[in-house]
Amino acid sequence: MSSPTNGDTRALLSAMEQRILTGRGMASPEIRAQAFAASDLPEPLATLVDRVARRSFEVTDTDFADALTAGFTEDQLFEIVVCAAVGASSRQHQAGLAALAEACD
Image (tube, rainbow, N blue to C red; front, side):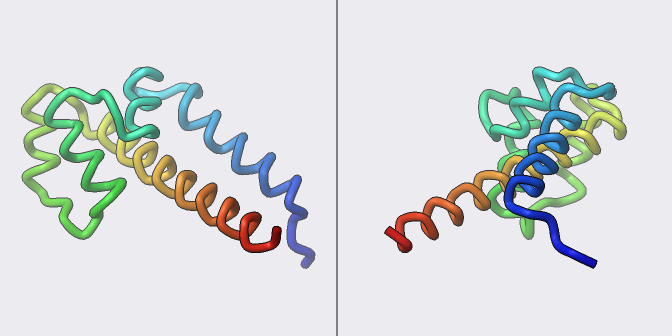
């Protein structure tokens, strides 16, 4: 089985990001985009997304309970957490590519 080329990988990553950000979902595209960027979210989502994106080992049941109490559904929280995780991964991937490019110059 052959591995995808860099162009294929970029296209797949871009397609995945567009799907989670703009595809059908229970959370609004605006909230999903904010979770992806880990910015401009209302509490308690800001705390949950920050922990998912930057310190996943600190996520607690209380983080989810607080978001549920604030009126978000479990389906919305699932989508928000996925967007936060993919956004953090995307930023790390981009930073890694930039570091490699700089090292190769």
